[in-house]
Image (cartoon, rainbow over all chains, first blue to last red; front, side, top):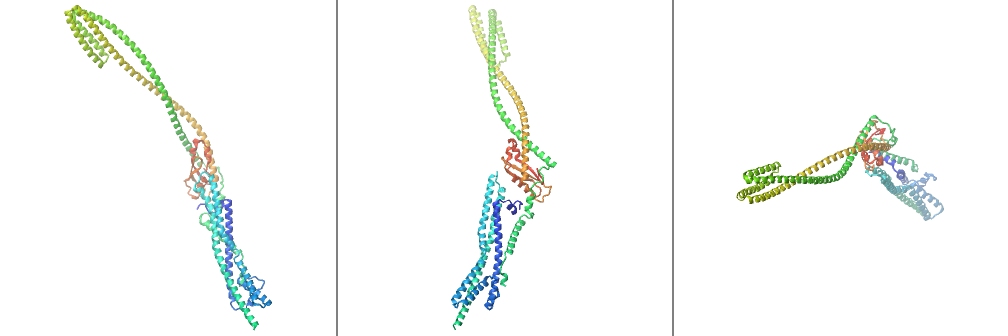
Length: 229
Length: 392
């Protein structure tokens, strides 16, 4: 490989626009990788937390005890967040109304809000990943087209056009496309993977919310039965 | 517990992402140029040359030799051109000479014609003189014959003999003139005529013997007739001779013309040679002047090329100071680069390639067009020697 044709050399010799495009793509690539790593870690933790919470929830512990384990000012995540929001609303409404219908409606609403927050949290930055995945090939292509344009402009001033005079320009320009693809391919793969993961987690949260709702419903039903009896 | 995993920070992912990119960059840099670990500093730091004017003796000598060779080439080329021009000029000169020659020939022909006329006049005079002489002779002969006849009256045989002797003398005279074929015929004729004359004479004799007085007249008559015939013959002879002489004269004239032409040719050739010599001398002077001028321009051109190449040259790192590469450069008519190839490698391919690239980057050498036309072609191909420190 020639020294003059090495990739760093080509990047250094490229025109300003192409260099800017390359810079943009590099930044995009780095950011998308940050997102990928962060999301991956976060998803893994969320999954682990969810599994732990479910284990604990179904271990037969008293719900009041479970609720009091975490101080109310501390923020919780995932299914625990949904549980706490629902249980808090349930306790508040229990003291105010006797209607099980009203209580269940309030609990469901608050749990839907919590679920929505969880969804937002899980899907945070995935849109950025999608943007990088879809836009960076075009950005890279733009850099290539611009570079080749410049190469042909300078070629028109040259006396003779051999392959060796054109080759560095084109190689330079093509680096932009390569970088665009380099940024886009992982972004696409991880966007699909992470969004699937978050969808799966959200499904689990929804399931949990339904189960919790049915527990509360059952509880209220028993209480109203007891109250009625 | 779940509380411990409450938040995932951005520090670690950022670190990881940056680390990943650096890794990719390193892989791309390391795997492609195996020898260049740090390509960026190497390609920039040594780009500037330490000096452009360091000159080694050897390089200078090589340069001088090369220039001399180039000058010689130029000289040869110019000479060839000169020759071509000379050939053209010669052709033109030959044309002119041919014309001149034709003129001269015409003149010569004219002269020859005049000479021939003069000759003819002279000849006619001669012929007249001859005829006059012959006339006199004839008169003398007539007298002699008359005497003879008078004698014949007395001694026919003697006269006969005399006539025979005369005839013989005449024949000898004719033989002396070396007109063999015609003379023979004439002689035969004459012989026949003689025979006739003899017969007649014999008849005359007889007649004389019988009729003396009448015979005299008749004889005279016959003699007159004979004389007439002789004269006729002689006239014929004369005319023939004249014709022959004329032919001879014509031949001589032709010869003379030929000679004149040959001389002219020789003179022309001599002139031509002289002119050529003159032209050669002039051409040599001109060539010397041209060569000096061309040499000057060529030196400027070489210097420009060298400077451009030096500026475009980026010496790769880790090149030993003794490395020398020679690049053979061939240019197009307007200075564009046709071929830059390694005529002598330094052994270091990176160094060779950098030299070729320097030439390619410095091309086109539009200064070539500013050279004099005669020298341009000589400088369309040259060698450049690269060594760390200078370009020769």
